[in-house]
Length: 332
Image (cartoon, rainbow, N blue to C red):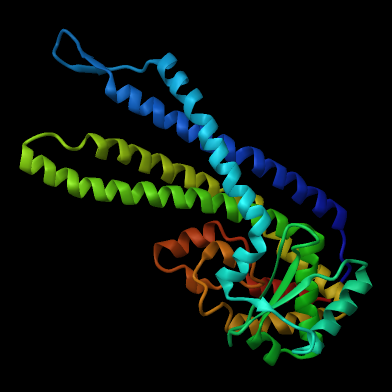
């Protein structure tokens, strides 16, 4: 299987990374403006001749409030992104329970990684291991200092050398293609909006409960703040939904490309196909329940999505069907 289009894939991923860096602040600022405009609209109203309330918006007031609030929003996101940018390796290690694998612990893995990196002329990445009987592997990082290949002990124990070389070659190809940079950027941005949505939703629930109590005790309408938070919750949900659409930018073709690159590096497409078949029987990580981190895995564990979330998981899936990947590899 000949691996082609490396430079094209790198260029595409670099462009998408820049697009995400531009699009995410734009989405966030758009949410802020809609929130301020909605609050302004519902806080202003007059009765017409028929006694009906007619609301209206004051564009100049909305613009002024937006101008005052926007720098704080951008500044907060900038600080958050900077922290994630410089500490993404530590964050991924903490989320997955990974630790650095020393050469003396497993020289077999180091020899395979070194041979593969020398064959394609790339720098040696860091190697991490997760003490987990389940089978998976992933690459992470955004630059040469942070590029990392992580494997589970279950994977090391079950795969033979050729199969392990195919898996590691797959992950090295993700690094060469800059897939990991795009994925980490996406994870950070979706995580920011998920956190904001969660905070607003919790505030909405808390104020709904206490607002109801205060209204019952004092006979006053205590739903003003609840209404505002409710509007914020809806807008956050819409914004989060749109950031989920960024998963469409993370094309499923990247996995086919990484399979092709891994097969070329290890020189045995059937070995990688065999490895994928074994991994598909028990993929995942026991202590990891974060779907955003699971985007990095060589096979996405379907156990993360149940019920209606399974439908959305399939709709926004970042991995193609494993059987299709195996079938393509077995053609060569």
